Image (cartoon, rainbow, N blue to C red; front, side, top):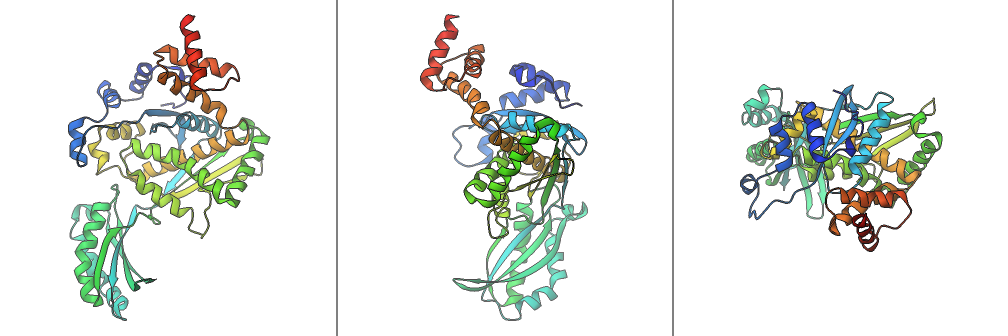
Length: 415
C-alpha cells in the first residue's frame, strides 16, 4: 500500500470512500464510517442518552511509520488539522518517514492509606509476592498473555491532612487501556494493605499519569523540502516555546490536535491521553514543549516527541463504537503499542506542520480557506458552491467574513 495518494483532498466523499476500498476496507465498513454510531448502541454506552453528537472523520495521507505506509483516520472538528498532518507526513516521507517505539503497557493503580504505622512500608514490601499473586488471580487471561500485576511500590506523602502512605500497583495491561483491571486489582488487595499497615484505605484508583507507558517518535524534515530559512524559523519557534509558558501551552495544544484526533477515531479515552501528556510536559517543574527540534550535521531539521500514551486496541469504546473497529483495520494495528507509536508520530507531524506555517506564511492563509467553506455552508451554499466560494477567497486577499462570503455566494450563483 502506498499512502501518498495524489489529489486525495480534491476527491468527493464518495470517491474518497472508493479509495479506502482499494486500501482494504469493504463496502460495509465504508458504510460504517458514513453512518457512524447508532442510537441503540449509544444508549448502552452512557447514561440518559438523547442523541448522538458526531465529529467529522478525515483521512491523513502520506504517512509512513516504521517503514509501513498508513492512512490515518482522524476525528476532529477543527479545520486544517488533517491537511497539515498530511503535509508534514509528505515532507518526512522524503527521508523515510517516522521512526517510533513504545514501552511496555504498564499502568499504575494507586491505593491511599491513612494513618499507617511506622513500619507499614516494610511489612507491605515483605508481603509483595503474596499481594501480586492475589491481584493476578483476578485476571488469569491477562497473566496468560504476559500481562498482570508486576510490581508494588510505596511512597510517603506529606499533605495538608497529614502523612499518607501511597501504594502503587504496577500492572502490565496488554492491549487494554487497563482501567478495569487495575481498579479491580487495587480494590482486591486493599483489605490486605489495611491489615499490613494498620491504617485505613481510602482511594483505590488507576493513575492517568502513565509514566511507564510511553511512546516516542522521530523524523527528519529535509531542508531540500522546506528550505533553510524554514529550518531556522522552526528552531526559533521551538526556542520561543521552551522559554515562554504562554506559547508552550499553545504549542502543546497543537501536538494534541493530532494525537487526540487519532485517539478519538480509534475509540480511545482522549481525556486520559490529554491528562498524561500535559503533566508530562511539566515533569521538570516548568512547562516544556512535547516535541524537540534540532539541526542535523547536514542542516536538516530533526524532530522528536515522547509522551505517555495509554491507548488500547481492546475493551471499552474500542469495541462498542463501530467506527473504532474500522479505524483499527485501516491502520492495520494489532497491539496497543503499535497504536501508541502511530499516535506519537501524528502528534509530531501536527506540531511540525503548525510551526512550519507559523514561522513562514502564517497560520491564517491555509486556515481561512477552510473557514470560508464553513461560512459558505452557514450562508446556505450547497454542493460545489461551497468549493467555488472557497476558491474565490483563495485567489485574492479579501477578508473572510459572513458578509463577504454571502456576496461571493451570490456571485457564484449568478455565474
